[in-house]
Length: 402
Image (tube, rainbow, N blue to C red; front, side, top):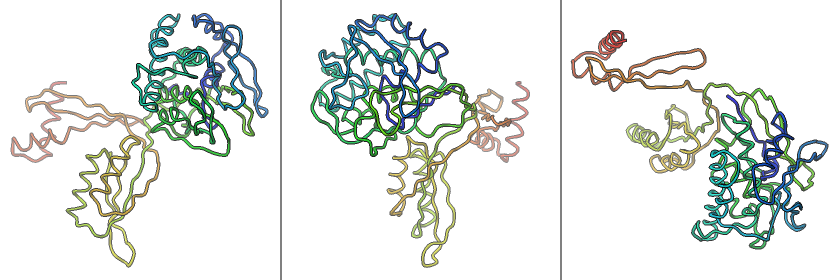
């Protein structure tokens, strides 16, 4: 699988993400010429070599009417701040609709801006159609968003993964005054995304960068096992003790299914078997992919039970709530781990025994087929036979019908 991975240990900004993508293309100069031909009014892209802490990369500058927009000295924006024009979502859409790019690029760019509009709407308590963008609504920011969508289409990865995002610390000055880092809109955009602060003072992740990652990244986490083919460094404008860049890696990952899952575990010594069974059912209903129990010894030599649920990232909160609601535990432990699974499909077969569903699993050189238990149980009840006999009858029927 062709995978694009972003290392966001120094945050993410629109110009840095674009420059990193640019370095992954076989002919970056040709890509810049194409960007300059898509028709963003008053905009010229310029590719420049940049060195940060001994690392050579690319800075993609945007010139508006011949001048590069420089950030004010007191701000920590990576994205350039053009403070003269405030645009609403409709005017941004009008600009995007007139560009010489594919419908896919236009749709992605508009989707990114809608994410930003939703964040601004939430922060300011204002309807989306009345939001006026400041820094992220200016021509140079529109150029960053469009350029990223354009370059991503050229690369066409099968999936995009990003590391946890370093957001910086301290405060940032913007159109609304001095705000904490991450700025409120950025913080809203990064909901459900793993983020962290640190020693570096300033805004490392901008609203534009956050929205691009939120839209394009299928998951956030450590770099997957991959055979890296190309590496790109997109440089920011600020200088820090750590190289101020986004690193992008393009390569192949195994097509086998791997998932990041969480083990949620709790020990109890004051629940009956019936209560534990009921709680296990509720954990499944809350979204756990697996629930099991293990006998354990607890303090004062009391026998107890370890209850463990395997959950995905999106289901973690609901399963945690179910743990506290349906068990007597006072605490739940969490461990992040990997789950390797076979790909699964379900086929339906019309037979003399009725509709029979067959689950097929494959991967890692293994192929397995198994008749759905509920269908076997139905046939066994209807014919007053054992499950094994029902399975034998189903096998003959499927073979007969091909």
